[in-house]
Amino acid sequence: MSDAFVSLSDLTLAYGESIAVPNLNLDIRQGELIALLGPSGCGKTTTMRAIAGLMPAKSGTITIDGRDVTRVPANKRGIGLVFQSYALFPHLSAFENAAFGLRLQRRPEAEIRSRTQAALEIVGLAHLAARKPSEMSGGQQQRLALARSLVMEPKVLLLDEPLSNLDARLRLEMRTELQRLQRETGITMVFVTHDQSEALALADRVVLMRDGVIEQIGPPDALYNTPVTAFAADFMGFENIFAVEGTSLSSEQGALAVSYSADAPYLGWRPGAVRLGSGSHEARVRSVAFAGGHREYVLDTQIGPVRADVDIAAPVFSVDEAVMFDLPQETAHPLKAS
Image (spheres, rainbow, N blue to C red):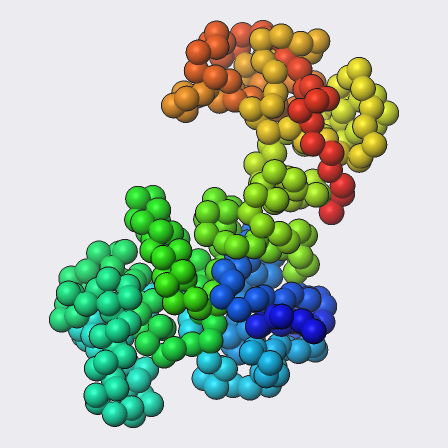
């Protein structure tokens, strides 16, 4: 028997006659934090909207906690939603924003006060209960949006790119906050993002999507270290990916003869796996950038641009300088087509 708390079975989603997500199957365990990751148009937000009940299924089923909710209205599914836009009421205090859903349900006043206070305490805003949203920082507004969902005691919390409106420092703080929140409440979370660093930092498992299909699914370290396809590798930072043709690497720009062959249609190298300053291939430095502990180079080569990260202590090459480089077989990662 499946231990799935949320289950999508043969789920097909469409906008009119245009299929956005074809025949999707995904199981999410109770208390798991899943990231739906991928570029714009890959189907991740459409999938989240279907779980929420905001997108009708063309076919297939959605099950939450053993209950088929495929045709159940959004407000009857036990789902909490946090959107990219926090949609807070500017004229209400933080307390009343968080309590709004309970007031719509006409809950007893004592229950409203206790549950709202508890939700504000969970997100660390109890001391700001009287403030209006305009008197709060972006991170505090984000936490208030979380409290508004948590107060409804949802079975599943869905977050649609909730950190994209925050600056870099606040995004890091909110990552920590979301991890703490998930750990303390044990709630099942589905987090939608196009940012691979957010997905890798937050999720128990990452679901990488492309054109409505799951390209690869697994723990963050597995997707980062062992992407299976060329698309997954490119999304996970393998910036040098080339087709293998016999003992040559090829791209649209040309071919590069190497001393090895590979039993894979593609090979990929992270920038740090490229050897710069020695090797059997000549290139010209297009650009160089200081990046703290290393320098980032872009090389013009006969197979197009090659990106290389080099330790800060290594000799420095200048723009337009001719350099030797290598794409070593021992640091190459074999990849399949999608």
